[in-house]
Image 1 (spheres, rainbow, N blue to C red):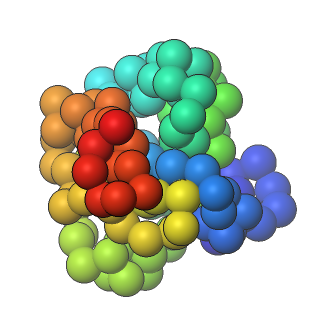
Image 2 (tube, rainbow, N blue to C red; image 1 turned 180 degrees about the vertical axis):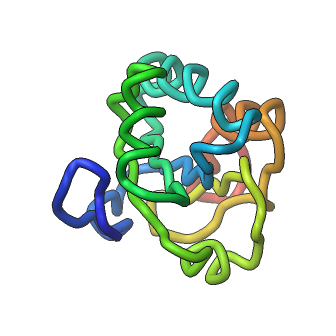
Length: 130
């Protein structure tokens, strides 16, 4: 996926880590409300990596990144192509990806559900919750 700040990024780079994969749009008001909370979460929850997949152009996304002081990686999709692969065309929406690279929980839609998903306990090796 193309990064807003240049270069490419792949989910494979995060194998071995839990990832909160958040789909946003710089034109979405709920996404704007969620952005600073994601930044805070990224600093407070060291065992989860937050990754934003955003729509729109580079300029609109840079404006949002600067406005919200984001240091979280932001990658771009042009026409919902990545969202289609996950089966949901909405923002904000998020998926929890486990250490093995698989979706660990149903999609979370909206700010409260996304934040709750991010703080969900890790599954233990025997399938239970730690």
